[in-house]
Amino acid sequence: MTCVTEGPSAGRSYPSRVEETLAAVLADFRDLPADHSPDEQTAQVLIRLAEAWPGPLEGRDLCDFDALCRELAVTGSLPQRWISGRGKGAASARLPSEYWRLLITVLLAWADRPGASGEEFGLAMKSLNAALCAIDVAEGWADVEGLPELRAWSEGILEPI
Image (cartoon, rainbow, N blue to C red; front, side):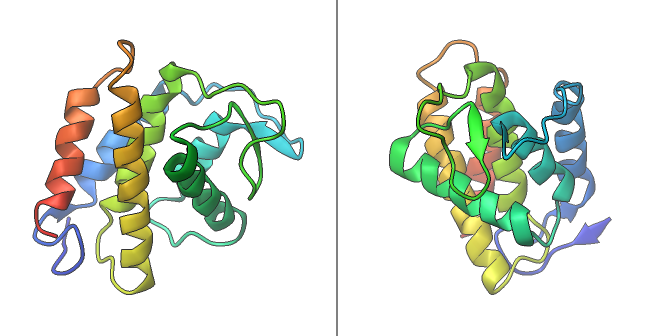
């Protein structure tokens, strides 16, 4: 176990809690069919980002992460189909609510990273902002599992900042 001394996760033990949380949520979503077309299911992008934790994010993953956070901050929504680095296509339906637990968990994992400093700290804050946007949206729905726990996790990240 690692102890973090700076960044949003200062003083908390890692990697076990975040890894355990990601593993538990990913177990529900791992059986999605692979889609290797230029656009893919947003859930598959989220799984890629979860599997890349704790990083660093590079290349396509970083580009998709940036676009995902921007899309959430600007529109408060995400498309079901994802065009790498750009977000939604012209005629994409909204990401179904059953995937928002995966979305928020992935964003909080990237916000609650061990040793985040410099650019990594900026990435963590971008992720936390996107997670808070997603939590606010999801609170309007009755079917997003584990939302109180996700809200508590986000508040725990904010507390030392």
